[in-house]
Amino acid sequence: MLSAAVLVPPLVVVLLLGEPWIALLVLAIVAGAAWETFRLVQAAGSPVLAILGTVLAVVVAGSIGLASLPNPIAVGAPALAAVAIVLLAAGALARHDPRDGLAAWMATTFGVLYASLLGFVPALGALAPEPAVGSPLAAFGADRSWILVLVLAVWCYDSGAYLVGSRVGGRRFLTHISPSKTYAGLVGGLVAAALVTTALVVWLGRPPVAGLALGLLVGLAAQAGDLAESMLKRGAGVKDSGTLIPGHGGLLDRVDSFLFAAPVTALYVLALFR
Image (tube, rainbow, N blue to C red; front, side, top):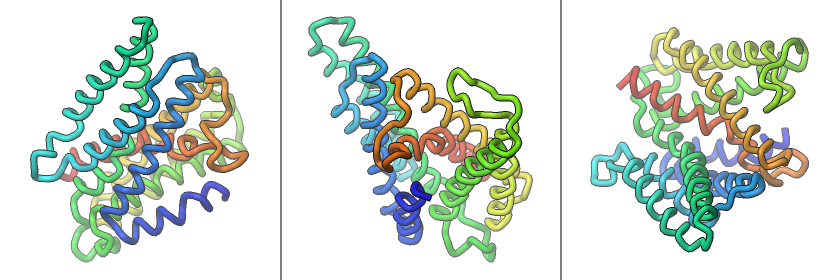
């Protein structure tokens, strides 16, 4: 409930407003998530170029969101990712110990690419097809409706996994990373995500089987994103990525699932419907 009180109101507002507000909110979240990522990486023992890395993460994420525009920016993410790697290498050259410089270069490059995955959220809205004429979500347009599918799928996966896992319990998996994850929770989350995506994709005028498959993929990606951030926090020896919500975690804790689910959703929709 505390997470929802912080994140849901701005999300509802930008979904109602559409672009460019969706992209601006995403870039603000990327900046915060990148900064928290670099703090975790540094706490885990790797030197980082946090300020330069945060700026480059926002730039690369923005280029992903702009990659569909019919202009020279369409080269977008790959070119800017390459430039980011070069700039980070140049920044690392200032380190007196070459081993320290190499570690800073590698760790910061990871943080830039990791946080910038959120740029696939506006890219999904830009690349996805329009809802079918006369479908229940036709008035939302492609940008808002498909992003809504992504958001609700991830939230339903998290809720389903928590509710089923906490009630049923049972055998756990990957306990060295996250001791509370159970197979029952995984199944419950996948069912919840599949149900909501199937309904939403049908309301977009698409076949239900496409929504079912998307829900399963988004659920698995969301779980992988959550576990990846847990591994990062384990390495740093901390419980939360930050203090955005006192006693409940940081910004990265709230969007970790989307970092993996957003590119999976965008590529799935692009491959199946474009």
